[in-house]
Amino acid sequence: MSFSVTTLPGGMSADEFLRDYWQKKPLLIRQAFADFENPLSADELAGLSLEEEVESRIVLEQGATPWELRHGPFTEDDYRKLPERDWTLLVQAVDQFVPEVAELLQAFRFLPSWRVDDVMISYAAPGGSVGPHYDNYDVFLLQGHGHRRWKVGQACNADSPLLNHPDLRILSDFQQQDEWVLGPGDMLYLPPGLAHYGIAEDECMTYSIGFRAPSHAEVLTHFSDFLGQYLGDHQRYSDAGLSLPADPAQIDGPTVDRLQKLLLELIQDKEALGTWFGRFMTEPRYPEMITAQELDEQVLNDALGQGYGLVRSPNARLAWRQEQDEYLMLFASGEHCLLPTRLLPLVQLICNRDYLDAEQLQTWRQDDEAVLLLEQLLSKGDLLLEEDEDE
Image (cartoon, rainbow, N blue to C red; front, side, top):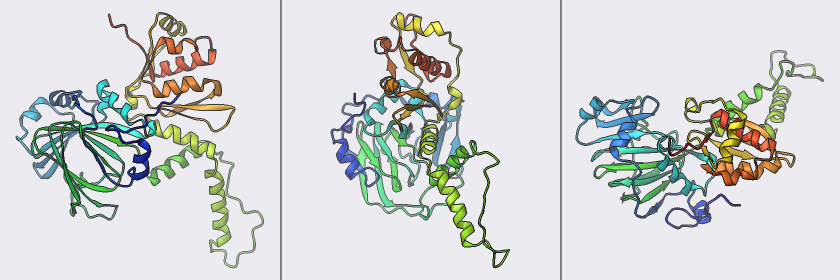
């Protein structure tokens, strides 16, 4: 059973996109989502920014300072005091709060699902922008409402000059290469490091589908921390067979060679690396929103028997890995467990479906380890019991 999609929104084959565009060059797709219906209004987006648990920002091109940045949560009075133009509201991870927005991610399953970060939505008054900048990750920019003019510029890196701004990384030198106006349903893909500058032509909303790309520093730091949890204090640097030093104060070449050998032996453990990476890439953005719950063992069986399904928590991140024939690993919101390989079809369903109906789970009700897995995911809050619509 395949869970991937083979074409991009708009019809281009996934193979062509991955070969010619992914992390290489921009791609404009007119009417990627034909007859696009905006899942939420500007007022509903602003309403989310009033909530404490939602990460939101407002950028004013000419506020108290040029490119003033304000952090939410906001109040209705904050919005009443805003000017008529030249400001932008940005709300992170809207897919975790609005199921209709989360459904958009199904169209991007030509890429690994564990690479998806979130869907950020911006609302901009006419002229609104966050300035010319570049991102260190891939992004698809889907126009949901109104029109935005996108200017695309040069390739950038850490040495690209920036304005002296305490919060925003705005380029001081923008070299325009292309320019397009996007309307509802149009989508622009941008690879990492490419300068871009979006300006609202009118009141508009833009959906930014971003992808996780851990920095080399994060990989090194977090993996070494992970390894350190399993290394005993007795495991030490050793130098048996040491030659008489010419100068006792010198750290010589053989010493560095021994250190390098020690480190290489640790990082060449592919099983440890794969385990850490699965845990790291499934860490939830808002872990406090995944709450453990008490679950009676009989509750699951009764619910499935009555035809109720299981719903994936919008905040849960799931992935799996199989390195050896004996077992597979399921990663769930930064944790992992070892499972027998016969559970692979169930694990794939859990990782790839937002909803598991009772019929799909029927064959697994007689497998004790399958039932235990479902119970554990329910108790952790990664899966939820379907609610009765009549309640």
